[in-house]
Image 1 (cartoon, helix red, strand yellow):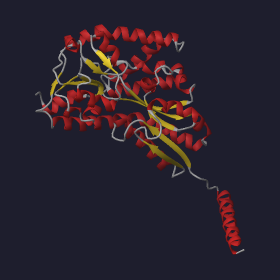
Image 2 (image 1 turned 120 degrees about the vertical axis):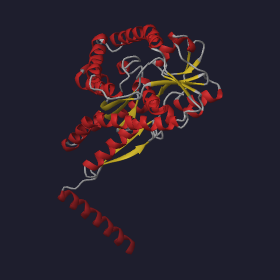
Image 3 (image 1 turned 90 degrees about the vertical axis):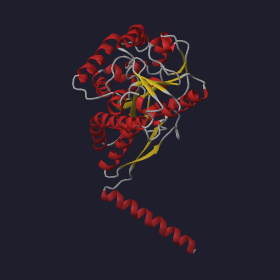
Image 4 (image 1 turned 60 degrees about the vertical axis):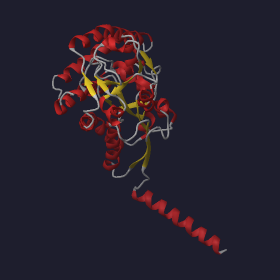
Length: 366
């Protein structure tokens, strides 16, 4: 009987506390699950960490996050689909790389469009805001994009010097679309390896070159401890996008106050992303400088860079436009022209400097 009375007291206390919370307007925190395939070390992850921390802070704890890094909850190809299934509420991923069939328009950023990380970041977010067809590709699949951010420009790392387009002929190169398409056109053989396998593959001789490799990600991944040469590969520029999105269903079920907080942070995020990218590149330059006597950096001449552009740029854009027209049923040329116009507008005030340029300015030539 005594045990029963204790249980009764517990139930009564719980009921009283619940009634008190309802009467006072208090409620349990909104719990969000955030998942990504990246570790916390990358610049894109730092933006996501800033966003989730700020949302917790500005909501006064009314929103709380469980964060899952490095594919610890969901594998990369399943991140965007998880927003519809409910397995995650917010994800950081790259549908342009991991969900190519479902997101044909996401690859609107192609090699040789721009070398300016800030201009690309601002241009991508503006395209999402202003182009209903681009926006619908995500929202029709249950994903509301919070922000997109550019990775640093592509680089290539090897154990033999690469200073011109012909040097790639016959080499096995770790690469992902769309860089792999460029490599095929200049005579290389792309090899599909995930990022973690790429540097190891270079060390073991599985590949001759490690590419599809943003400057800062490469150096922070310590590719300079394996490679003896690095190159800008002809100024391919920025080709990769990190995209962070929230479940449309979860967003729509939030109260107006919480939706407004998310919208405010969305507007602030692109500038923060550029800030974190610049910090990451500066840190990578410091690390690469420490290996100056071990790694030689080669920049393609203007003539060699133009050769690659002439071979690859036009065909890549034509292929993307065809996909947009046939698979997404939109005017691909109009969308690409719109995106490029935004990038060119932001390039006029860009302050971005590429990683190898910063390296040469700070550390000098080998």
